[in-house]
Image (cartoon, rainbow over all chains, first blue to last red; front, top):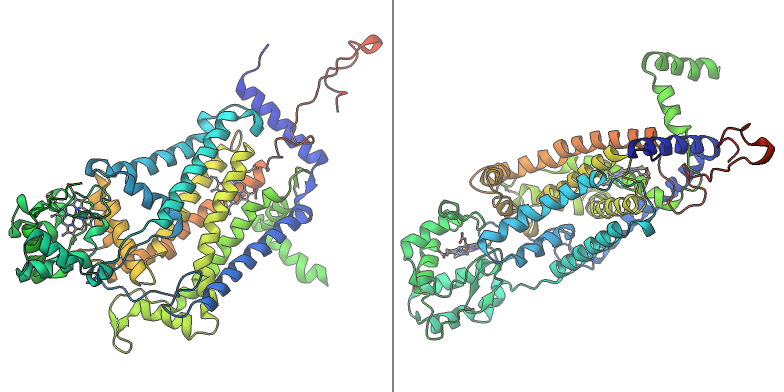
Length: 277
Length: 258
Ligand code: HEM
């Protein structure tokens, strides 16, 4: 008669205990010896990385393993591309895949939660006693796919290219915008254009074909057709009030800068060549 | 002499706590004879965690979790203290470098250890709870990386955290509250730093240490699995030899099948 799974499990485990007692090796000192060597290797690798990191870099000058530190944090200038630590790259890149505002939550909350649930639940939905990888094809294929997709996302996240605001300004991009959109001479809007390039709006938004199209941020090339300065200033001061929880508040820029940004956005009506991608 | 100086106090403690018997139980147990390097990854992870705890404790003695500008250097206090640790303290760079790179090594080892457990099917009966404490440890370990990243208060730290906090804000229901809590106010500044510092060096490590304790207790109690493909795996199936001839019926099935 076939035995129930629980009974088979308990029999197997009783046999396991018995075998370990009769034919096993001593944890201390036999198995501990391997462990100790492993521990020494781990500490050695950590010290090695620290030494390479320190001696190859100098202050804010990066070596192979990056700089000792970047410049101090400056909330005012966003001329900086934020990067998480490498083990968050996969999440970082996932965010670029979900381009529509309604779907961002899938990448930020949905997928991580599902992954965590699948991991925690593993022993409860994979209840077969079989342990040999060759007899667990579904588990092995799932594992390989998971590792592959994490690897690809991490790689993509690591090599994702973004343009620094200062590079854009040095290349005269804000002036091009002014010409295309026809607001040359409108000083407020021109100042706003530089700010727009410098404060990293393009890390999420697209403007006249430039930018990332990240996190569901819309193309702003023709945004001036929808609203006016007053609205934009309010929007930028507190995007959350307009139901936008992705974009942070820009109130730290100060009223004057916000007004300039607002003027720039208002003047962005699509121009001669409406670049709507 | 030895009796009096060592054994007697040990006995005294053991009688009252069971500590000596506990240590013996932990050390003098058997493990399957076919385990090898793959099963040292868990211990390696433990060592990486110990390195983080130790170097972290030293860093905490010199680090200042505040974003106010230091009048002497003109830089934020947190940033200046990191500079000081890296440039001025004896071997400060080594302690900081080990903490920084140890974090990556720790995460890599976590994943490698988990991969080996998965490959061996070691999460199955009776080790389900061992697996679950492991997954919780993994999540906590990633949170350690997330909260520690802000502390140097340089540009990367700051802007990556701004993005991170905004991302938390996208969660339904709890999102706005969560990002408010993490930011610790309207702007990301000293209050944020103090909060993340408390999370990074007190709350999450506390939870981690408790979880690791349970994890290790369960490892010792349940034992670790043999490689499933091993011929001498502990718990392997034995062919049941049916007694034949004159002995049939005299011998209980299974008793001769060693
Ligand atoms: C701080 C982190 C961790 C530490 C210090 C740790 C430590 C250990 C140690 C020392 C062992 C003994 C066998 C071996 O070394 O492979 C072990 C076994 C085990 N660990 Fe971990 N571990 C950690 C994280 C994890 C994670 C993230 C998981 C999975 C999600 C996990 C699941 C398991 C399981 C199921 C076993 C039993 C393996 C067997 O019976 O063969 N652990 N752990």
